[in-house]
Length: 487
Image 1 (tube, rainbow, N blue to C red):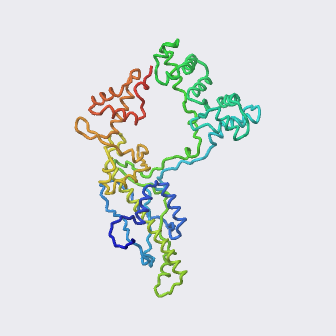
Image 2: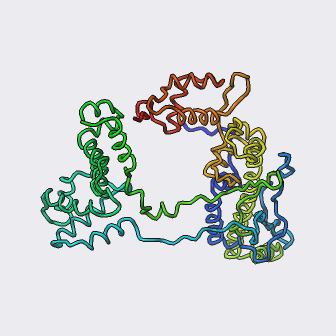
Image 3: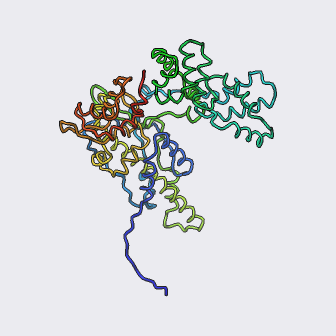
């Protein structure tokens, strides 16, 4: 039986402005520029200001964190908001601290030929016996990955050539083509595994006793070399310790990833970091500014405002077409107003959050020393700037700051804390730095195990468990002691 009844319930909904703010907050400087240009194309009620920008910027010396800036009002809009030209909201994004006179130079980019094009050009210059040879070579070059290897099995490549080109190719002929590719630059290109890649490079070099020994070691004891089992090599080869050391040195000079010598794809070439924030030391004080150089200034279209004034006259009778037109105009005006307010709120949120990070990591921004980094988590920044932890997380995601000491990801400044013997809270990043120094200074013939590293840090006043040492070592991409051993 169907019954009707009244119920009360609470439900939390985001306003259109809040939804805009959440989406825009995660975007980087380049992405927000693209988003604004997209909105300008899609919404005729939004336009770019053509007047000269305001002279007053928001940059300055970073002092106390407290700010008088409030959040943007999210009250509902009505047609009356647009009835006079004075009420048409406009929005000026603050100018960047760096003007055209002392601005940061952009590095010009020019596209060069791709890695595959470079290899094909070399291959076509060789004396190829027939068209089939050319087809096989072009297909093999197309299968070379970004590291410079052909990792597919030759019988699978033979099957592909039969299906795609209708040619039956024996594996021996594929190897003939491969031998030509191995003669090309960069040396080691087209190898099927690491051992072959290193041997190709060695055999193309001028022969010396050390290189001959290196070839002998790689051909017969490749696994022992990779596991640093030098005693086994010395025992089985007629080499003394000095000869083996010279051979190993020759091997370490080789490139295990020859494809990386050439930035082959457009995405890799175009990849560059554009800082969203700038923090500079001027006369011993920190000066903070934001990346807004290419972001256009926005306002509501005056033409659409006048259109609302005309249509909203209550004395005039409106036809269905006019009512539809006024609804369309109102929707576009609302969307433009929400977008402008969302951009402004994003600007305020980024500024306040970054100011909080600067306030906590003030010493680091002055010195650039990793030891000056203080322990900091999302909650610390959240409590200082007054935003939710999720908001701080969105701000710090994919954002970068340029300092006098380099460009850093905002996530670089976040780390957990530990307590030393003196009861002081220190950043785990400082412990990692000390751990790295201990490993760099160790005797490579007898590298320190995790237990010995734990004792070394304990002697320096840091109580760290062995499993924590192992975790930090892995985060630093440092192998275990056995693999760090040298002769």
